[in-house]
Image 1 (cartoon, rainbow, N blue to C red):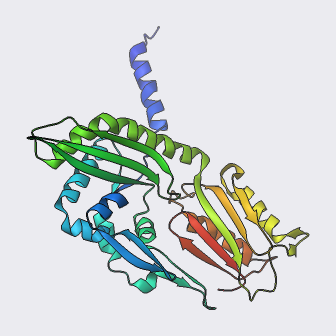
Image 2 (image 1 turned 90 degrees about the vertical axis):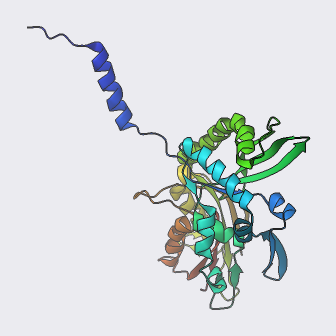
Image 3 (image 1 turned 180 degrees about the horizontal axis):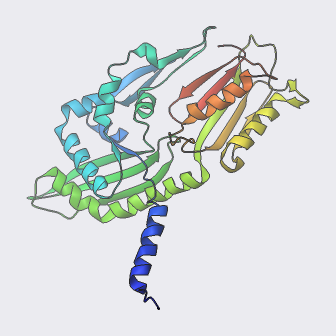
Length: 318
């Protein structure tokens, strides 16, 4: 007896199997912040001491506490992004958790006195661990009874601070006085292309690795250096061999190297480890740190961080 097969049902079943085997592409996590220009224009800047140098950075905490328009605008953008399936980090919540940390926790100091201080921005990025920072600037234009909004959205890779996407424009004049409505009218025409660019960048990172920077230095007290031979090869070459084996597709670039230091850029690291946990520069460089601590090197060393994407390993002390 011949069995008739409904080809339409069979095709639908095969499509379902394929869909379950290949889930949707993972989305980047995003955090929205007002731009430096907006914060400076509206008086939300703070000055801090970065190892003797005075640096001005946005005072996000004050801006969120005092500016109702900022909350409305970010809430609107959050909603538009969420509608398109992009997970969002709440910057205000991250700032609240940071407020519970002391300034001493942000300072990493060696037993010999060496140290590094993170800026408020670096601490915010590390706590949020967002893949992409969206910087938003906007101004309200008034022409008679009508208003419009001019905006600029910049998508920045939070590990490298490189701009990866941008959207800018001015909405049509409207009699509406509500800022979120004006913003939505101005942004909607540009948002899908902006999101597609963000997703393309994230997909490239998924395929080719996330980009970080590594510095190798040495303490003065250490009697060896990066030209010291270990098992017939200089230490700098041994470090490069480890990177070639552990980076995605062996991608990295040694920009500068002397007997006392190495500067390695465009180091492509996996986004996730085998358990699915996100990897940052610190997590990746922990492997190199352990490698150097073990024989045949047995080098005591210290790992220091700046933000999510910059790591420094200092050899010879802690």
